[in-house]
Length: 585
Image (cartoon, rainbow, N blue to C red; front, side, top):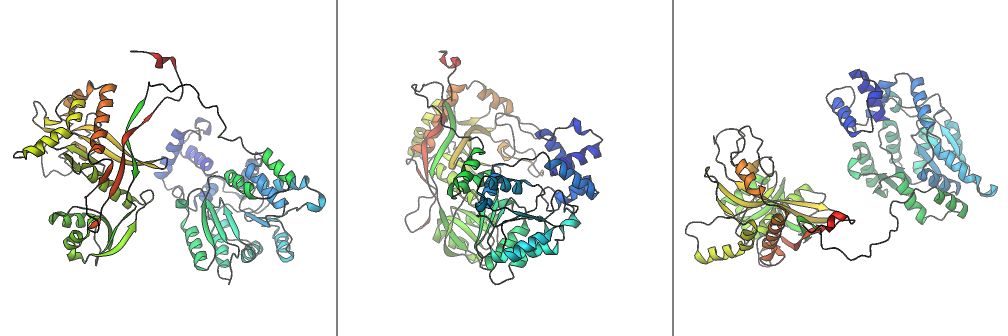
């Protein structure tokens, strides 16, 4: 409805016909959303008042809003979830349903379910709207269940609630029934946003009694991160009042119903009726291929599986608030190698305990046990592990790690004047496979320009299908001196800003080494790329085996970051055969 209202307002304001736009087209959706972001016609996307404001902006008159609802409802049919809910009510397993919807689908599904039961086994619902709240009062006083209560009115009601002023108040009798039900039962909230101040106020009133929601309170949502502040506050109050509170993530009403029906004992006629209307399953048995797998083609991914990563880091408390850059600078001044993520007066760290505490003594640093890391949900933990992983990969190899806000990288360390001869020999040996794959020097200077270059990798840590992967992208890094070292926004390295991975920088001055870099990579075809990817994978995982340690600390000296990195890159084969694969050249 909100999408439809926005489309109508958009057409009105831009003098377009609604026939000219397609609200199912992502291009039009983006265009309409951009229009409302640039205007103040409606509240921001997701605002609790968005629905009411949009409805009233399109249909200012109450009778027109009723007609819109009536027209929309006339096209509706019960879904699988409605049939399950109706069967549960007919079987006496659900006492009451409170809904903000106007449609009759719940009661229609319940009537249909009762129709196939014996007369003495039926449970016919009483339907009450805000203009027939006496029915709800009678059901409450006489415990005559089941009840379907329409909190915003029925589509046939004269009074229905849609606009902001209408939603601010709740009918006193219907509010009484809702509050009293909260005192007697537990409640399950399915697909409710909590936008209505009157309903949320009534629910909060329940929490003022000695034993609110005695059988628990379960709030179902597609994503817990999208709960409105009013809902979060209500759930926290309920938990503090001793209510058994749970937030359950569930994608759709139908999926919820399918899970419920698996564990609920329904009379066989009702169960058979429900299962006849279930959606066609998306997962169906298939005949697995029995032909021998082909060696060609294979798609090699430039990514390595992270088989395991740190689950804890050292927690360090501070006597004053600070930031990650300040702590890193203090550690750098003392020559301390550590990886940290700061949050106010504490931070998570990998490295030597003694060295970290010594360098941060001016901040009153002290150890405070360990801290759990959850990189899938906490960005600071993701950053900490990302930093430590890059450090562990470069350790004991002729690689230089580079830590950037836009993404980390490693580059080949060029030979240094006065370098130990044995160390130089070991470095050359470690890079021999990579040099053979590139068929060129890995470091040097760009001809004609004289800028130093180094081969290297962009590194990215990604969670894909529940598993962590290290993606790596080979790139030729060129050190381009700044034209003006004091110029705001200038960059000494092309990797400091966004750019085309195979060439041009977007700065106005362009990339003077772009043509050379493109020419360097132009003749490297699939086979060369495969050799380069394989050589990088071998280099990153061969030294010291697949176990990578960021610092190589002895037991008890501190908290090290330990990773298990698979030496085999990801790969895939085609899902079907094609005559094109039979070619020999």
